[in-house]
Picture 1 (cartoon, rainbow, N blue to C red):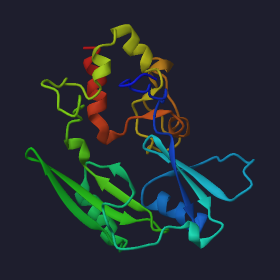
Picture 2: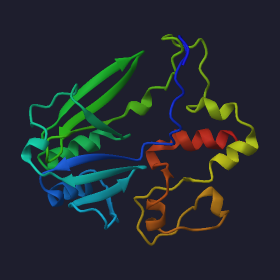
Picture 3: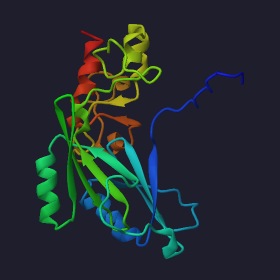
Picture 4: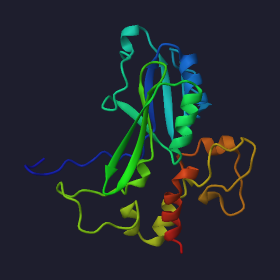
Length: 229
């Protein structure tokens, strides 16, 4: 690589999962199911250690049973500057109320940028890992060039789509599901693009879709529709 050349990024597709070592797989599984709404999915049987796989919101959570308590984080006061994973929500008030109902200790922060206020809620899972829930989708994603904001920003959240021919855009969305995977497992709804109009898919099938657009991610759906109207 010559001097001043940028390395080519790895050909990645999306975030697949995050893994947590936990003291009790059962207790942590119940937390991610009952508090955060994840669904338990099949885990490869060839693993020689205890664990659990969960999925929702287009991302997986893999829980691994620890071999020593030294593997676990040292539980401390809630600090938003610690490592954490973040989930997006459009209803922060309901999140607060539900956490208070289950007596979950949390800390709320408000961040302002250009007159837009972002609410953040931080709390710990049973093993001390930090969880954030925020409405960061209120802020536009503005790419930086050479450390400076561009003079003009495309209306779409996904600028690469604007420069893609319409036929290629359609082909690129054959994997995207436009339905919530929180629906009942047997309830038919709109299917993936690739299955054609009028097709239905069960909740279990939708749960395994590689990319899922949640109900509170309507801007994604609107961006997609802009390319066909």
